[in-house]
Image 1 (cartoon, rainbow, N blue to C red):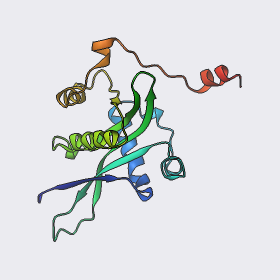
Image 2 (spheres, one colour):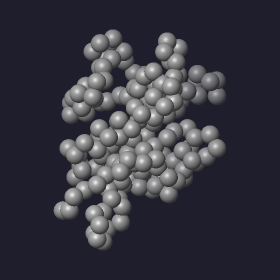
Image 3 (cartoon, one colour):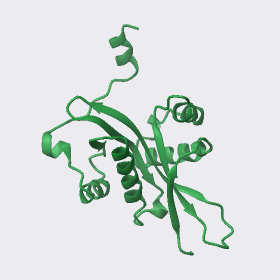
Image 4 (cartoon, rainbow, N blue to C red):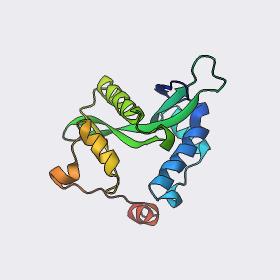
Length: 172
């Protein structure tokens, strides 16, 4: 294979089909495929409307000069802004994923560094993310890049309300 050049760029609306396929690959990798309910249409509406709920970066493989292939998206990082009552503006990286054949080439690190750059440009004081407890490779990467494991350091646990529990809370 010729030299691989990877470009990290903001996702475009037309990338949503490929991003959805990568979301499904990530869910399969995490053994949570049954939890993916999102559609390509929802990704388009939620990420590219007037007030986007999320932002997304894609890692695009660019062909070498003279190579007949088209550029190909081989990874993504989906993030959004949150707010901490203690520290103010934060960014949360919901997903980071690189296809298996492109792992180990620093693409995940490039995506994370770009999210950090965006966060600083937006005045964020923290960059947060979560990882499954069995994904040691990812935890090791995050720690090597300077992240702190809040479960180890502060004992935080993550919770969520969904479906019926949300409706019951809302009285619906």
